[in-house]
Length: 298
Ligand SMILES: Nc1ncnc2c1ncn2[C@@H]1O[C@H](COP(=O)(O)OP(=O)(O)OP(=O)(O)O)[C@@H](O)[C@H]1O
Image 1 (cartoon, rainbow, N blue to C red):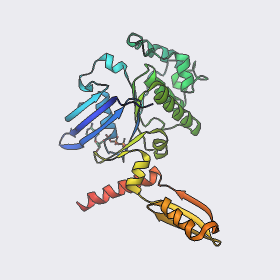
Image 2 (cartoon, rainbow, N blue to C red):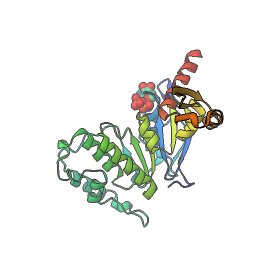
Image 3 (cartoon, helix red, strand yellow):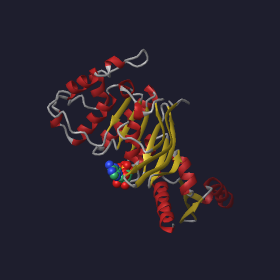
């Protein structure tokens, strides 16, 4: 469920490491309850952006507001409203799963409000991330994918209003991935949690995100829904059909009109008609290649 209220507001964000600019004028926003995927090649600036929004890294310039607060000057009360799942987290090996979540949850109880009961009940939380069977196991005995599920549980134990997920499903098996996607949908739809995630899995971005932002070389090169980006960037749909026993394939910009003309000309003689819109992967690859070609031409 998305609302008009802005949860994330980033304008003219710049980051410089030494003498190298790695973010140039990055501007975007997210409404409450929106799921945003940040995509881009290695080194594009995704983690740097997320770390600035989390308040872990100080920006060089620009305006950033996260839940109405500048993360560079945020306090504990703000931190309790924000959940973070980092790329890797390797502590607390001796703790048992439920015990650890119960313990971490106690830090959030003083931030409970009339609207948000904090923390998440440990039994409900282990069930939500699919760790009920492992609830009494020591953390160090979990498999890689189970550890990642626990990372997600740690990130949401305080029932955050805004959740940052940096490559959340690395190491998940297909069942865990599907369950995680359902959890993200539930958090956004039922609890109106705003979610910003980075991923290299384009299928995952397409399934989860209301909106997709592509960063390349520290600049935003695309921002929109998967369909909008496909229309704007990849542009062409693939139409396949059979006529008089022969298979045909054409790539066209306006597939609805093309199919209409096809039927007007050949009527019922057309069989096996299939229209395939550009996937996010097609769109992403054509966008990144275009940006690289422009960079090489400069
Ligand atoms: N602490 C640092 N000091 C200097 N340069 C850094 C530092 N952290 C990141 N960089 C550089 O900033 C750029 C952006 O890095 P960042 O980690 O944000 O990219 P990313 O999009 O998250 O990449 P990946 O997909 O590989 O995780 C890279 O060129 C990287 O080398």
